[in-house]
Image 1 (cartoon, rainbow, N blue to C red):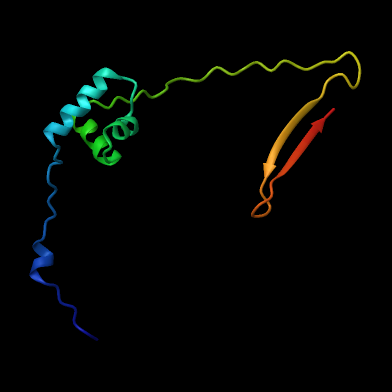
Image 2 (spheres, rainbow, N blue to C red):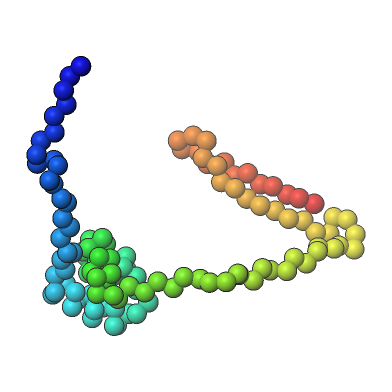
Length: 114
C-alpha cells in the first residue's frame, strides 16, 4: 500500500470571493439610457452601448436597476367553441410546413383537413 500525503497548503486553504466591481462611468451611461427608455432590458442596453451583455447585466443587478416581473396565479384559458357546419365540404383547415431535405431545395408540405 502507498501512503497518501496532503500538503499543508491544501488543508488551510480558504477560498475568498471578491466583491463584484463596476465601472462608475459605464454605470452612469446605463442609468441615462434606462431613464430614457425604461422598457429596455440588459440585452437592448448592451446593444445600444456596444458593450458586453454580461457586464451590463452585472451592473444592473449590482445597482438594483434590473426589475423582474414574475407572473403569479393561473392564466385564463381560452374557451373552446365547437365548430359546427350545416353540411359537408363547407369548412376546411389547412397548414403549411417548410422542409429542408437537401442543401439547395425546399419542400412545402401542405395538410388539408375536411
